[in-house]
Length: 263
Image 1 (tube, rainbow, N blue to C red):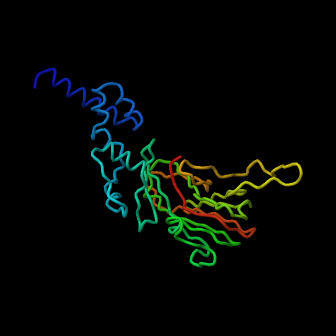
Image 2: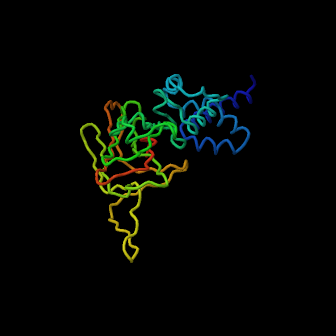
Image 3: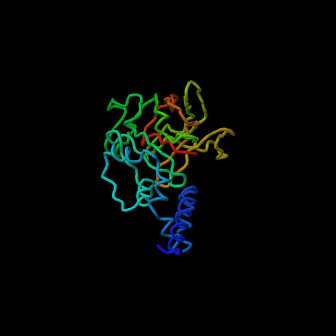
């Protein structure tokens, strides 16, 4: 190998090491600079560093269709764009595209929901893996996840993911959420699945400063924050999330699950 070729290999190796210390977004930007940058920025050596250490084990446990990819970059993008179904299809996994950290969705069948086994109150099947509320007074939804499976040195936020039907009612009442993390409990009140309607001639909607309302996601579902917690290196505990509302009869709620993703 001549001196020029040796220098080229050395520079490519150095560039690969540098890009591996950046982020997926930075690597994609570098790929657009030139053909030389493109070959390094899209290389398996770079994208292997962005993948989580246990991605092979997670893929092996998948119950969904096998992932098809030709490079580590394609695998990364696939894991960030499409959920991998785990645990009988009741839980799903994705990578956060920006950070490469783990995201999990605890599906409705993975949650503990009051009266979920009684067909008078909950229905299953019309929306894949989601629970449809027929009618209840006591709405209680709980989920639990082991912190050890999450990305370390990260702050996670838990969200209840749901939809409502056109004939839903009773969902504009204030609810309470709880997040228990290693004996520490975070309680949030005045959480609403739907904004209260205007009342009286003024059309005024009663609202307090600390009221929390859901937001619409890109996938069309709604989400409301349940709480957040730190996931530090060496942590091995259960984190529990809960949503409770016991003030009125409710119907028309479709629960997809509880999602945990990095803040």
